[in-house]
Image (cartoon, rainbow, N blue to C red; front, side, top):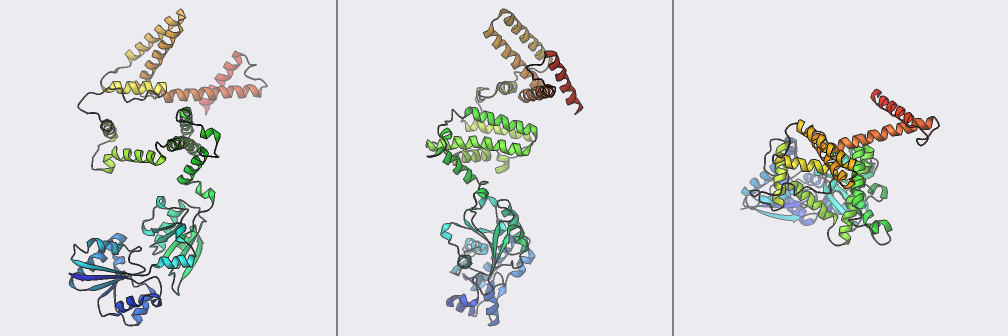
Length: 490
């Protein structure tokens, strides 16, 4: 079994390297380095130390992972034949993917692995920037930066910013969370005689000329409250404050039951914003719907029953479980098959045996608005064949229900009138479904149309010095027709 020693070159000059490491590098033995672009290696070269770098491997591949794979394979093959040393910038366990791969594969390759350690550039960063990592410090990889993983209230150090292209990708990712002019620090060769700290607005990050393999980006913690208002954690804190001691009396007394009507109101206002095709209004109304979710979650947390994390977890689990064609190996042909699979998975979640008949209408929530509930009931019944196949009998049924209503109306029987009128609406919903018209949307459209025309009529009357209370029915009818003509001309 061969032996592979790994040591870190540190972040600075040769003078900062531990004496033991220096002696190890001066020995007559095969020495490999991930990159020759390091101040300590330049000085060692002047002292006659020879080494083999993997800089040319970077030029052969487009993906960093492919580079690391080739370096790992080469080192293991060399170490199987002889003892070798592998030197990396900084510390072997800080932002060194090749070291991680070597640790995973050394045993299987019959190679003895020894990690000697090294001096990380992080110590130099803390000193150069005068920051205390105990306040909260996040170290992330610039080649795989994700906006969602960033903790903006912590010190953020982004490593592996090798060149302007990576710097540009880092910039674009940060700009999704921070203002374009947010000040960051480009720190290069910290701790060495060539140390450079360049403070730039975020939008200029990829224009700094000192970016190289010794560069890291420092993002100071966000302190301004206005910048943190986009963060989910801030919203949660606001809701908890409203419900907590010294908070808002109205929010404090709310319960799941008392908030029910507000959720419905906000949902309908959101639908109105969608109809208006107003993105700013829609964003606002979606926020109001989210407020209801957050209030319910906070009530659950206050009562010790559940928290927002439980809500998110249940939703995430459900989405993964009900989309096996995305997150597993299932295959689907089209959207209809997706819906079919969704229903089957729902049945399994409820512990229902698919081989035994289940109540067809059992899972339809009765709290739906009337027309939506009617359509949902009819759709479920239609799936088992209980449905009209032609429109004529539906029209006949509508006439029948209207006749029955008139009979009760003429008799002055109000209780029966209500039942019969409900039957009229139920059949009307069936007609809408037959013609593939959303009854609820259709009624909302008519409501909006009525409001629009009435407002037009009212405005015209006010222009002439009258109120609707003072106008005659004939005048209002005339203006109503004018409103209709105006809409057709638009």
